[in-house]
Length: 459
Image (cartoon, rainbow, N blue to C red; front, side, top):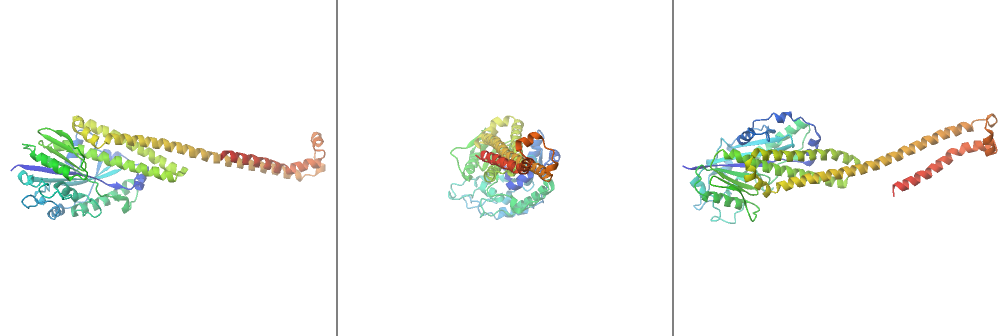
């Protein structure tokens, strides 16, 4: 019997609160541990890393083993999958490939980013599956009750009212606990429950279909139509990245369909799907982080805040430049597939424009921050100079006062006064009176000068 090997690659980012992420950015950590990582739980990633170093630095965080029996039970209890024309429901658990179904948590030490990846496998007889790919004859009003969304609903919640599968719920709880431990160990930072989250509607899914007997496009067309139907937002066009008699590559929004006849093509295309989603998630993260910093500085632009954010901004700039380099290295690694496939996909998602805009924005923000810092520092310096001037004047007055007090204690008859001074002041008593009140004269003049300078500096 002709079978279809179908796998769903589900890439799910872990949301880190911006305040926690900024704490992590401030830490200086070693990259050596990540650079030594070379083997992973995922076959497609190991295969890709054999030929390049683009994703070797991904560190696999060890998770507890959640039995696959939970997933089988969840599939047995799935009520949302539509029936075929004969009123039958596809028994997904019967065709689950237990041996190859995996889930893995990765940590990228370069970008301080965690991502959870599911790889769910099925083996379906082609003639049985064929009748379950139609949706129009069943009920056009069915919402998210198709093959693609049934799998997606297992691993991500569409909204707060959605019910997550028990298998995924156990995995996600373990993931969040392991991330807390990882951050505490590597960064010496203790995290709260509300600082880490697997957000609703964040899992992007790629469906890989291996069919060694690619006889016609009828089944391919059904998958593509189902893909379009499953999308939440359907655009007026679709991206068929590549199409010949051995490969059909259809790229969309939340779901993507890749149909192929060579089993090794799965290892060829999975890194493309992982990378584009990884770039999207990270760019979104950095844009949100910069917007929050910008809003904070609009409300509080003290010199202290500027000094704190200046260090963070420079580190984010470094991350974005590193992300750009990482993206270029990946494109070099996939060679001809960049022009044939990936360039169309990244253009569809506007990734080059997003990366360029992020770099421009962050450089502009850095310049703005530098100018603001210089302005604040200049004002601070003026205040310092003003304080130093006042201190110097007070010291001068103190010295004059000491001198006057000394003269006032002298006996007039014992003073040896220059005759020219006596001629000027007429008598020695007048000279001593002048010395006595000299500090008051100087203090009055200096006070007028300070008032003038204060008014001038505050114009």
